[in-house]
Image 1 (cartoon, helix red, strand yellow):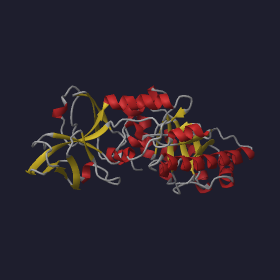
Image 2 (cartoon, rainbow, N blue to C red):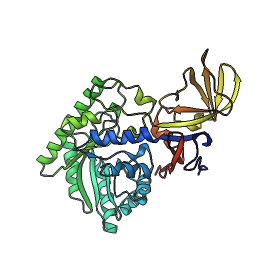
Image 3 (cartoon, rainbow, N blue to C red):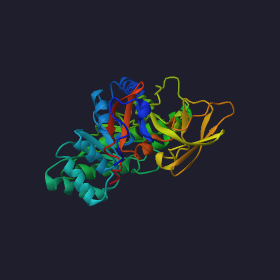
Image 4 (tube, rainbow, N blue to C red):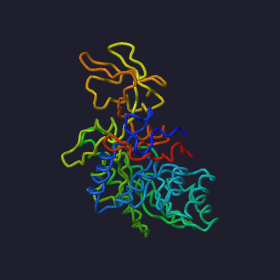
Length: 369
């Protein structure tokens, strides 16, 4: 693991860089805003964004029913930390992973997705072998064209297979439109979720018509959860990135009734070289960020722009007239994409004002299995 970059009580200017940092005031506002905005619905935040049990506990304390994870080992990290309701919003097909997933159900309510009848008997046997019950949700393709069985009759046929399998409890549908989260205009996002909601409604109706209860339709993300919430088709919402935000979410145009979340996540870097008046180099490069959504941006320093990255160097341009940072001075950077950036670090330094308040382990970091 990486050395702990700070201790509670340390001043900000002593944090060892590069470090993943969270502004607690902004972070807590985001938690409260989502809790308030989703009252009357089940909120199951996606923990793949933060991979941190301390954050999951803060979400549950504000009313969340549990968390989502993407991987078996990610779920294991949260169950070990005391989270007692985890939905793995992914298909798990490898027998050894399924066995580990079933074992978690001894200590927590565990859900998993299916989009094929082939895996149903494997899940059933794993659950029966140790005397547990796994909750199963059918993932339907509502427009993202990733995983998911076709909506309607094909999903109803899969539901019949789940209901007939010992050790499994059919809970409902996963109807997540991930591709809609970063559609830039409210109109584009509205159209995408209207289609997703219609698929969810039609599929639930087909399952109920087959004599099977379909208790929960779950889905949604930070970019669209208000649309799923108002559609009448969803019972549970799964936003995750709202706790942090990032450059890419900042590119979305918000609708008039959208809740605005504050940027709380930063990578703290330090100037390691100042070779020219128009250029400084910081110690946060390709290995300090995920670059799939583009370059990070500089926070709170007008005239300073992150222009280029190599493995361990970030090249910052200094615009004419701007005051450049000095050698060793800290520069705050906003990641392009928060989720995979978090996965590069072992610790989150949580600060308030100019003081470190806590350092949280990113317990599920690297949990890829």
